[in-house]
Image (cartoon, rainbow, N blue to C red; front, top):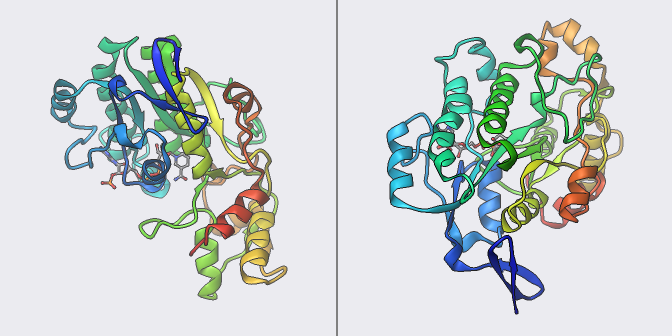
Length: 326
Ligand SMILES: NC(=O)c1ccc[n+]([C@@H]2O[C@H](COP(=O)([O-])OP(=O)(O)OC[C@H]3O[C@@H](n4cnc5c(N)ncnc54)[C@H](OP(=O)(O)O)[C@@H]3O)[C@@H](O)[C@H]2O)c1
């Protein structure tokens, strides 16, 4: 059976809508990263994904982008590519010539310059982060989808500021046809190249090096498998707007890591708690790096996509069933 929605033809196959091949390719940047590479494994559109490596498509190189858009017609762009090292980005604070600003702001602008003339024919999906919000006492999370951050630079990490600038550009350039998908601490069962919010403490525990964990910070986590599912839906139905993909609940890092260690290593209360303010006072760390009142809410995204995201305990249970390795 074929269905038509917004001019896009879907084939009914095993109950799932599958894109018609004739609807063109989907450009995926950052496809060898932590999140992008799992999207490639799981996407029901995987036969239509175009996934250049950074050597072939460097977002800071306008020539690379021009050549690519001359060679292919894309139906959608999913921009995972980013400078994601928050600590390194901080060393570049206020330096627009630094790589963080160049990739996250100028790179997105370069992509938008290629996409904007094709508006209406092409969907642009910018992958973003909870770090566009401060997580501070003055503006507490968990944050709703409808919030669009206009936070001064000195209230965010430099990484968070560059990602917020990217969001602002996407909204300005694409207007009603902008799509932004925010995540927070994306996790998966296996990925040898880069660790994540759960596999890192697991590894440290196994090495006997686990440090005390914050017991007064509010966070949520994003299950990358659910990110992939949400993205497929957003692409297949050509949905615009701002979406959050995160656990449906929040917790403290202390609760989350304790649960993980209890379930994977059979140890109870293996984690020592520490208060965030105490840690900041003792180490002289920047509070911007450790947003106390964070997390993303997903209520509006769930309603729009018809997807229920898992609470964090269920995410951990599923990762264990998938054979999580540190
Ligand atoms: N990880 C998190 O905690 C987190 C949380 C929320 C949101 N996000 C967002 O999710 C997205 C994916 O994050 P991730 O953790 O998967 O990142 P990642 O593992 O660091 O991967 C980043 C990807 O971007 C590519 N890239 C970097 N600079 C580039 C450039 N100049 N041109 C083209 N490609 C470039 C990298 O290529 P190489 O491998 O060749 O360097 C890599 O494929 C990002 O937009 C990030 O801001 C991440």
